[in-house]
Length: 454
Image (cartoon, rainbow, N blue to C red; front, side):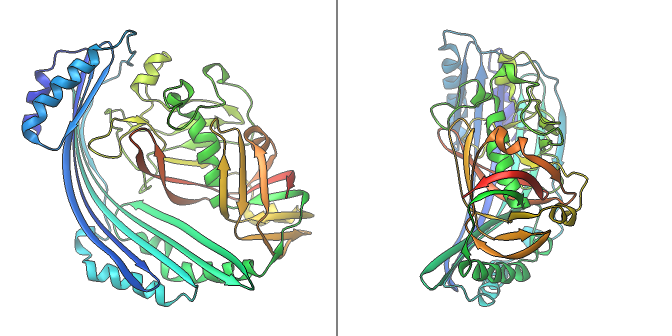
């Protein structure tokens, strides 16, 4: 395989060229209300060629006999551009890396997986129950004309659930996604068999609760809420292709522009990072899809806009270096700027200390709905599991507190961040054609003062 890729690469006369190979083996099971709905196994592979001259040309095929033809097409596309594309100059690397599996995917047969999901279902009494279990074994080879050669093997397991309960005409639903780069140790990490009955119990309490009070309160958000906020109001607006307008037609723009580096965005205790190197994170990688080493990126640092997420195209345009944020969801998709694990860094407080200093407030532990505008500035979050706080104590559950706020409004009201840290899985969509990539998002418990809720 590598010989074939190298032969194609050596035939391309261009400013820059790369050839990628990806092979994906995937298994999928869905169980709805105790009934197995889907059992599927797939395997596919393919090649992608990208060429940079005046412009960028891209082509992909799963037919080995057409690889030369695809390369020629990419060469022609790269010539058809009036304004020359900038591409950052980077070092070359040769490496092989893989993710360890404590409980290997290949050792879990389909029947064992199905029985696990059925066991989970039997422990729940919710009126609506849906589970999805998917595992993937990904093999990648990357080569470029600068001498980089990267080989990677990445196992990933993903678990998703949704449940709904009704009481006296009220309906509440809960959904959550868990994922790791690794094997079936995912169930040990989160103990799904115990976690879902606890989630169902909380949901049944919430569906009976009174509507959350409206007004100005102190607010404590849990790691799940912190994670979606970090992802949506920090990660996305920090993507350099969105900032430069390349994503405008597909996913929107950003309230951030290149001149805002160093501008204040919130409290000085706020640090939001995106880090592909968090061990076993769902979007873990050692090198990105352009062969650039992954590293932690401080997007907001000490309350200021600090750096953007870059691939080589956006880095070249802004006169900097790539920080390893190029990702591709499949063999036939171009690498574009993406997040991996985006989260608030932990602070100095214990979780208990956050509550102790709240006279009257709301604890939004999880969310049932979120919305954000296409520049990632105005946003709305609706609580799922939420509680009233009085004199430092959780008093009772409340239904659906609503937070509507701007991005700097949220970050500027943060006055305390706990030491705890929790992550949740997600599938982040972006691009045209659409690319859904595996990500983690999360954070610790966070306290905000004087927040208007409705």
